[in-house]
Length: 290
Image (cartoon, rainbow, N blue to C red):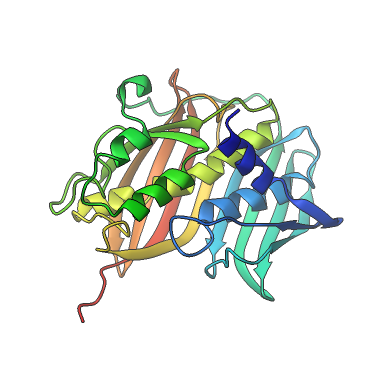
């Protein structure tokens, strides 16, 4: 396991300060606020630690309410909304400086057999044939060195490989609002299913709005032609998967309007099983001309 992955796992390992109250820390992100994927992942850790071990996460629905302060701890309070025979529901509120910054509802279910079908996996190249983040990012002369370093530091724990050029790599002309990345953790994880859900939740917020930018030929915050932030985030966990094995994140944007953009995606295992569905809306604004 890489030191970066160990550091990330330590970040996600919350301190229990009361029965259903947890405390987490933060670390610098590529933007001057707490990375949304970190808050969502930590909230899932808090929820999962109040759920019986025989129940597995099957969905989460979250709202980003305020920017998080990377220099302050985050307190997560868990409400035990329901404990049914098949389903368990938890609500988590993340608080900083006395104000809620994030709200999450998560549902867990005991395993059961049922009807089974899925959308087929789209075509994608072998991830091993694609450039790594360091290989790709260090080739972009138009990005400031400090931007490249912040990207690389944020992704040290995850091997994330774009199938095509990311928005900040080639911009200025609209492209198809479709983006694919392969990802896996930089090191093996243990077999706890919640841990793999938490790591996938963390990564899911890294690239989902890329397809919105592609549709308008925008490069994103890295080149300063948009400003934005995540508004809400939803995930459904369909089938078992491992976050330390290659996962294909197939993303597209069906709409952008009113200063908001919508991204939707499916995450597949390398052998073609649909593991996760994801939807997110975010603020995507063009900076005002002075």
